[in-house]
Length: 372
Image (cartoon, rainbow, N blue to C red; front, side, top):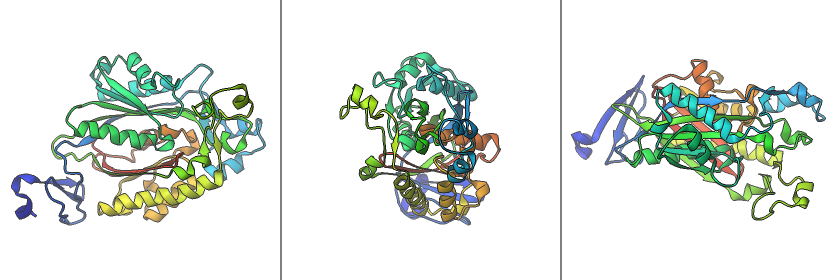
């Protein structure tokens, strides 16, 4: 490989028991003693996650509470979803409020001020309003003077999609501090007389800071994204857009709430989350047993465990916090990162897999090395 690339084009990076060869001008993969990767695309600046911050509103909505609202019970909810409770905002609390708190915690953990942030990307399907973007509201209240940003809508895959957009801004060399936030107030679009959806969702926010890698750091390695628009009818909020603008009729028909074909969504998610995860691991020469941590979107515990089993991963390497938070849509993955850190199940040098499936349908998977 050295003959092909030259001495200056090859860097050897140790990852615990792993060895990674960073190839900037070639595609040949050379195997180390345990594991080798060829990092693609060939880039001179790599992006890493340098900090995490999360926030959930204090009010709880338990399964016992839901028993008093709809025809359901704790056993039914727990067995089918894995959820026991979820956090819900009080009246008047918006997505920007949750996003701001998560962003503050993220920056505080890194020890920097808001005015050092250059870009803000907010992944959400529950923006405060159609416009301006929620990112604008966060930027102003965070004091991120001079920053630019935007919202990204990809439902439950919003965070991994936004993560890659932010990473590419770092890799371009144009930015050194990009704040990526996943935040949703799902309770604002849930019909609490519909037991098929009201038991699933909660409110929350999670933020990560992206910065350039230094020295032998690797950071974000690869991603696999896919959409399948044929599934649009299976999970959506039909009212409020240009197709069905708000009217008395759309309100009466409850078109401003989440509508879901649960069976169709479940079948697609079980298949596609595993396929996306396998695709990205296979093309990077990684197996499930090589991962330090699997951090999936928290939609359903059965989907998560099915994916982990297919990847050959032990349950102790899988981060699951859906029992405490429910499905917070774009916030689930960064919130699960925080859980992994708090439980000391995520450490510097770990290979980490993220995976998600969301409305659209959207599919995403990310392979990265944890760098702090």
